[in-house]
Image (cartoon, rainbow, N blue to C red; front, side, top):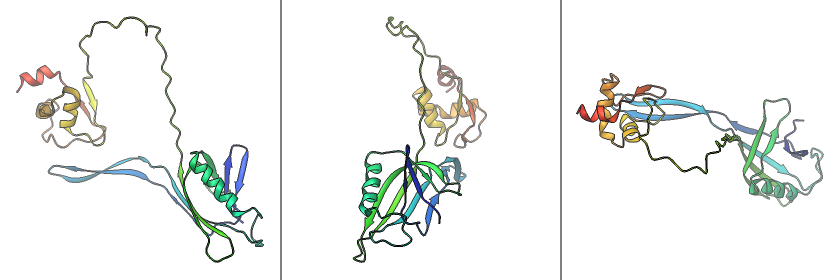
Amino acid sequence: MRKFIFKDGNRELLLPVTPPSFTITHGIKIETIHIHTLGDVNIAGYGTLAAIKIDCLFPAQPYPFSLTDENPYTYVKTFQKFCDKRKVIRFVIPNTPVNLPVLVESIAYSERDGTHDVYATLTLREYRQLNAVKVEQSGTENQPRPAAAAIDKPTAYTVESGDTLSSICRKFYGDASLYPQVADANGLTNPHLIFPEQILNMPDKSQLVSGR
């Protein structure tokens, strides 16, 4: 009999009845952008977080296939607590690749046939931890700030998904209308056709304005 295990620290919660099925969605993010004269283009991104759906039975009757005689609403309350407290737990199905940290997104439950058995649907989302970067203190935070000087902007820019040449010019120069000059500086025959990871040279704004 396959076991569905939820680990909360040193505590393990085992579903009392093996679910008849479960669904795990795995994929990547695909963004569709429209490029003038070319049409729609799909840009493949990185992996999305797994989505998991499990239909459960929390029995109130002493069925021979039940692994416990626990009150069914004990399970309901436990998963509600995981959900409300945004608790990260580990979901494991032994002898399968399923072993990952998850959040309980929702639990829907009902009684159907007068047996007091509880039928529930668990929706889980894979959890991915964000690691904060520690910034070392320079020891000069209390020193007076020097007079403002000209900011050296990068001379190169790597195109990101969703960028357009005009949006990049707005970001760099505060003037989206400079995109034709930037296109010329990079030898682009079509200023509307740029791709993620493409590296653009960004001339000084004074050179672009004088070249109008």
